[in-house]
Image (cartoon, rainbow, N blue to C red; front, side):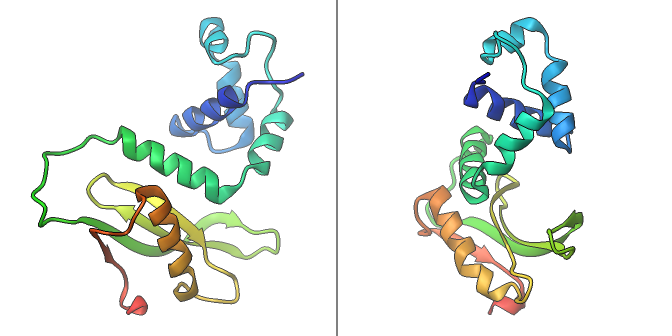
Length: 164
């Protein structure tokens, strides 16, 4: 059976925002919806099982998904009062090792993230290579930020001294 891609992605985002932290929890969230909500999402001919949700979400391109989601969040963020031109958007860059997340080889996942300080939204993040540090990951992170904003013009980046 085929399921609506838009509906599955919407369910995944909403379930995670509601606290789901596993593929099973995302599937449970979908199954807990009432009939009217399911129909509006396009699930009028049945619901997918957990393995279907897992297969879809694991096959998505992580970078593209993160860029699309960050752009969508930016459009939904409350815009504050208009700032004079002399003020810039400040992007804070920092790296973190994720607790409880492991790669296939058993090592912990380390991410370098860019946060828009005016909205509190993580604009982009990249995985730091296991045999490296954050420095080589900085340029791909800037590319990802540029993909969300369209340009780096007018952005002020704040990072650890390691990046100077």
